[in-house]
Length: 156
Image 1 (cartoon, rainbow, N blue to C red):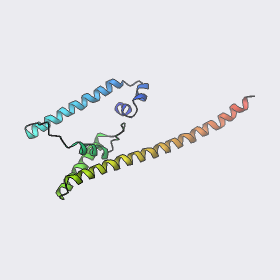
Image 2: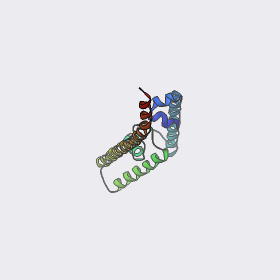
Image 3: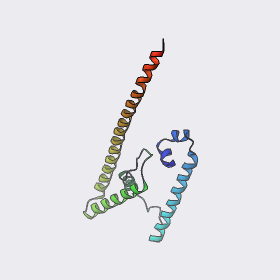
Image 4: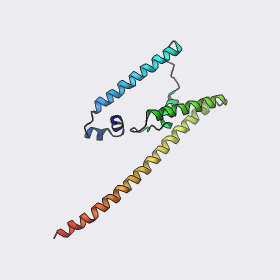
C-alpha cells in the first residue's frame, strides 16, 4: 500500500507521514535484487551473459506492463497483471513471428497496443473522476443546503 500511495501522490503520502525516501530506496533495492536474480537465471540457462542480451526488448516490456494494467502515470497496477500482460505480448509476438509478419509490423502492433492501453486508461480515469466529483458535489450540496439556511437565519 505504501508503494501505491507514494507512486500515485508523493506529496499526500508525505503529509500522512509515510517515509518516502525509505520506501523509494526499498523499491530500488528490491528492483536491483530481482534484476540480479534475473541475470543469474540468464547465466544459468545460456552459460554466458553479454551486454547485448536485452537490446531491443524495451518496447515489448513497456507493452507488456501497460497491457497488463499498470498505469504509466504511477500509482496502480499489480504484479499478476504485469505477468499476464507479458504472457499476452509474448503470445502475440510468437504468433506474428510464426505467421511470417516482419519485425516492423510487430513493433507497429506493439506501439498500437501501448497507445490503446494508455488512451483507454486515461478515458476510464477521467470518467471515474467525473463520476466521483459529481457524487461529492451532490453530497456537499445536500449537506450545505440546510446548514447555510440555518446560519443565514441566525444572522441579523
